[in-house]
Image 1 (cartoon, rainbow, N blue to C red):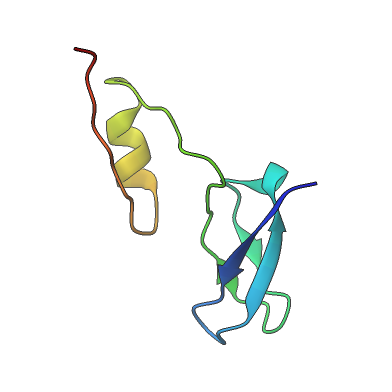
Image 2 (image 1 turned 120 degrees about the horizontal axis):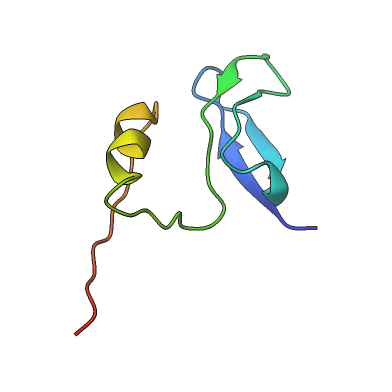
Length: 69
């Protein structure tokens, strides 16, 4: 099973998150603070889903644009 790590903004603890839980809000295993939903893989968006995802995500978003040649 694949895992990724998320650092808690409240206490700095490193939390190991199963990859199949990507995009879900969780709780820190140390202090129980809410962890931002993170993504293990890039999320493909289109013109209908982009605005809702970016404005609804509670943390920073890294965006890469590309177009076929």
